[in-house]
Length: 186
Image (cartoon, rainbow, N blue to C red; front, top):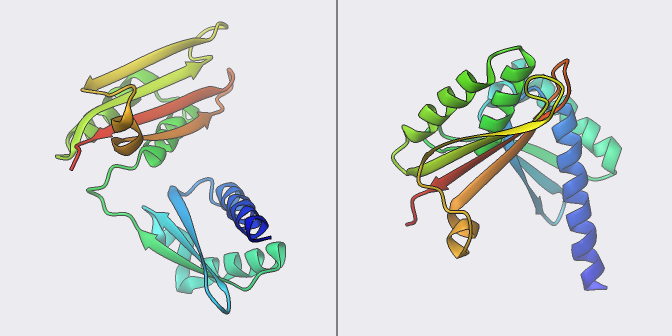
């Protein structure tokens, strides 16, 4: 029966993550942590824009907490943790590129700008951006943009390569955006 508790906890975390991804789709958030306390469940949202989630006077976060309590029938406490600027967050970069494509910005310029921005960090060895879908015209294609050194396989990939995925929905069709960042081994 202990196994079912762990499975149910994982399912609850994924449902909360999907719900927050839908509610906060315009706000960049990297990940959530779900901690089980004796009296309630603490949900910690890692984001680069804490003010957009908290809202003026904390009204947005209190409304979000009430919605989570009602939807999942749990006693929840929602907290926000700001991600530092010096940390590279591939999921946020991928969603920024997707948003730029939806706003009719040129995809090559977006990819080059974000690659240069990623490579400015001291702890990054390499980066790769892959765009796949109806980029231009009626046929699908895949464009890869890379700078630096990127590991593709092995144990180092599991430890030091961070990936982020987002989907852009311009008028032509869907475009998938994948950002991979190779961080220096410590």
